[in-house]
Length: 231
Length: 311
Image 1 (cartoon, rainbow over the protein chains, first blue to last red):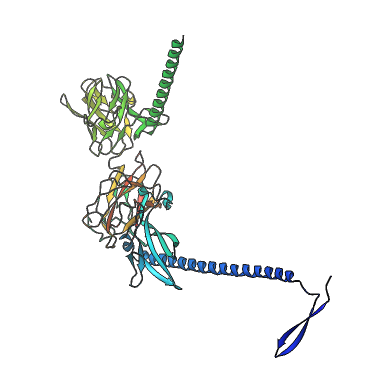
Image 2 (image 1 turned 90 degrees about the horizontal axis):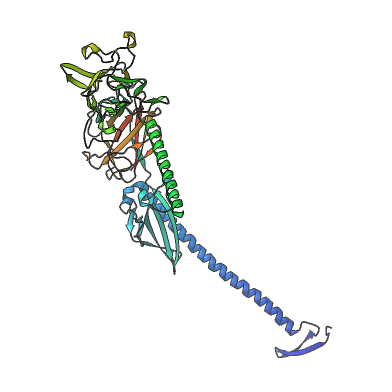
């Protein structure tokens, strides 16, 4: 069904008439339009996909930056808490407040300090606002931290710390971490044979303040026993 | 007809209620009897009076004394039993009807080395004196420091002499008192206790003041002790804390009360302290209480006491 008819058209080129011959047996115009439509559809889809990917990539980048900033804030807080929990104690925690106070860690001073309010951080032209919120924590059976705070089981040496990072129009990331007063020490007494009468601060580690007649601290050095009992 | 049925139903309900009440009372009586503390011998637990007969200080049953008579360093507690006159209360804090000390204060006292004094009470006989002078005769009841055997006489205005040992020299008291042992033609009897003078069922020690060195105060976390704790004995703690080295010192247990103690089931177990009672306190001290078993035969031994705290 191909038409092998030769047609000629004339165009002016450098004031010369050039005759171009086309094979009359080629594609029809409608076929060309359809092909162009399909190609255009795919190209358009690809462009839209690329745009979406670029947008998601940008959002992901912002999220990653926000998560990093939140984690950094928690890490800085941990540094403060591990160095001196009393700096944390000053701010306590308020599990009941609907809008708990906001704090950030001021790292422009040494050592770091907890400061009221929030701070702004610019990353790749985006302004992030970050702050901490302190909430009370409690411990239940087996000293496990309770998911829901109970005032009866409050542990003032543990706080639920929430690091918040906000940017743009309502975008937000928050990370929660339980932080415990963990710099521990101890006092031990292993001998009482020095006797009683040391009513003040321990000077002789082998003495004590007072005991009643039932106590025997001399029958065996380094032991508290009951008088009259055969051990 | 219907009224009669209703009456029968009501009677059945009352009967069921009575049976339940009786059962509960029986169970309560059984457990209270079994759990009663006594350090009276299950073999030698009889005193004698010529009027009322035998007085039982043990109520031996099932291999144990089911009465609650116990000898302590400063007192006797519980009540002895007589089939003739009923219970004889030795201390107002442990009468058959419960403590009555707020109404009338009485007890048989122990001077710490086994010499008894004071009064017991019986609803029929009235007061029974454990030491004194009657008709020019000085009498009393003592506990032998070596053997734990009771000896001597108590006195009742109504029943007369009550002998605590068949070996009593009855001739000096009153003829007719049953105080002859089997070898003299009488019957062997006495009361014996595992209590010994100087044997303490409990003791408390208060430590010196520990300075954590934390200016703004430390958070006391736990207390742990090492040593031995035989079955039936106890090691208890109270903690006092302050931000001043001169106190005040209030020793409290887990309920922030001065009457309760932190308990341990065995040595080497960390006892968690209340988290808010001793928070941010620079100074602290402990009170440790050792308690023997009921018979006073074994007691715990404490070798180390360690208090853990956070800066």
